[in-house]
Amino acid sequence: MKLTLLSLLVGAFSLGAHATTSSTMDFLNETSPYYQGSRATKVAPNGALISDEMYQEIKDPANTLGTYTPNEMTYVKVAEGVHTFNAGGILNLNVVETENGIVIYDTGDDLHEADLFYTELRKHIDKPILAIVYSHEHYVGGAQHFIDMEAERGNEDILIIGHYNHNESVRASFAGVALHKEVSDVLIPRGANQFYSFIEKEGPRARGYTHHISLEHPKGIVDVNTPIDHNGQTIEIDGTEFVFYVDDIATDSANNVTVHIPDSGIVMNNALNGFLVNIYSIRGGAYRNPNEWVAALDLIESLEPKILLNTHSHSVNGEEEALRRIHEYQDAITSILNQTLMSIVKGDTRNAAAHTIKLPEVLEDSPYLRQNYGEIPTMIPQIYSAVVGSFNGEVADAIPMHPAAEADLIIRASGGQEATLEFAKKELENGNFHNALKLGKHLVNFDASHQPSIDFKVEAMYAMAEATMSHNLRSWYLSQARVLKGEIALPAALPAFPEAVNMNVLNYLENYRIRINHEKAGATEAKIGFRFDGGEEMALEIRNGVSYARDSIADSDVVLDMTPNAFTKLYNNLANIDQLVGTEEASVSSGELETASQLLGMFDVLYDWENDEGLKFILSVM
Image (cartoon, rainbow, N blue to C red; front, side):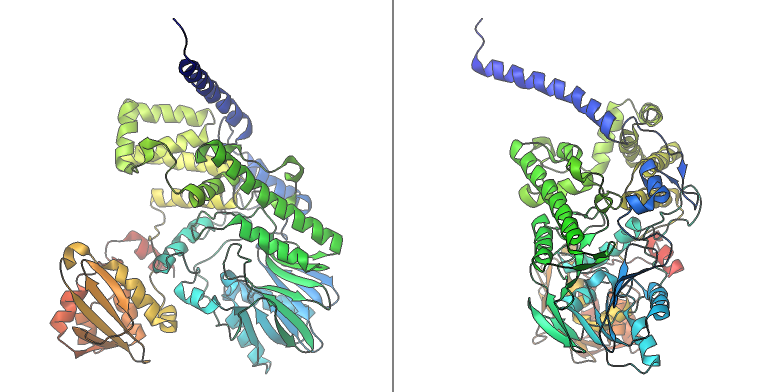
């Protein structure tokens, strides 16, 4: 029988597929710590069981870390009149002296960190603060402490310089605005998973020795009073010219401010990190376009810096070293992007590409490109999604499978709960930690009350935490293990802070619209007007089971008058409209209370304080 060209091609593809499966597992077994790996034997000073890669950073930080010494205050005199402080995390406070004062770049994550910074600052410099510049919105929580401490010194005239979108972004959420701002507060609990917020300080499952975020420490956010609205905007501060750039330099925020001081060749930036950039952060957020990050680095290079002051990395004094650092970072990001695009063109799946894309060998050992913050495999699918969307091209995945249905299929196909659990335990023993955790997920989804499966999934998460070099991932594994064990609980979204609602109550009223329940609303067509004591007005229109925010309250079926504090209670489901009217925190100025109660009853309760264990836990620690 003649072999057709088609049959030869099919045969070749089939043989290739079988060969690839075997060689791929050989590759993973050789290169990944999650396949045929070993449990951790290294112990951090706080007792944490960590991977060899993490331990190396403790043993030899000078050569392996691109940031300053963890858990210690560091002061560096970068040049005459140029200083960098680090409070033991990944964030730097950079200070530039003018003739009669100082300009600082960032303020710390919260008031506690700001106190550490300010105390150390005053040991070395006595000049008053003339200006605070926000690199972006992530590290502004310490600003109020600097303002208060300066006021005690009689200094009450401080410029607060930031991106023109800064105030709007911060008011949308303390974690920054999401692509769809209505869900911005989801990023805060996810950030708690990522930054060791609820991990023990000591013991084998203790938090890492790098930056962590404590939700127990209050923030003191101060609005920008001097916005930068275009590239090249120049402000003279105490006789020194500062040039600001804000356009087309997005990195981990779209609201970056890069600062150039031409007279001294200083460039302050949020583009050069002391670790590999998180092209995608596992806490979520908008797409971080690698091209934009590279453009931010292009800008820095074009300014020909002599001194680099970085938000998350060692400061640099010297043109040659500055250029080397810029090029290394540019090349790393570009290489990851190019490899990913090539994988897309070749037809590789995103999950396969995630494990084959590597840094060029010449860059592997750079302390500034270590994957101790995030790992490349977590970033590749985000680039795929930006290019081809969430569908991976496999028709079986065109309709997302419900987790319960997937678990049911896997567990039944594997011979049931007990048989799957025994197989999973062998995978864990053999060092196939990723396989073990995947099976652990299905085991718990199949039967969330089966304690042996719960215990196994926890142990699999511990194994992954011990194998990774990424603190972001390690924190997620340990946090979710604590959640599964019932030691902590996290809500899906954090309730609104009264301070945030007071800053922009209309923003939160607009966010409220997504809670409309189309089944409850049915064919209702109505309009609810809100009037706040500051004069702000907005209406929620209900139509075809959808709610829209409208600027005008004219023709509203009912108009409610209240303070932002009262609306915060409504927003956080701490009171309904009947209760607020009953306590005289709200009133009905047009229409009937019964109408208002009926219409607002069509919006779902988001924060169930009686039954949501995550809300109860957050309330207990804050």
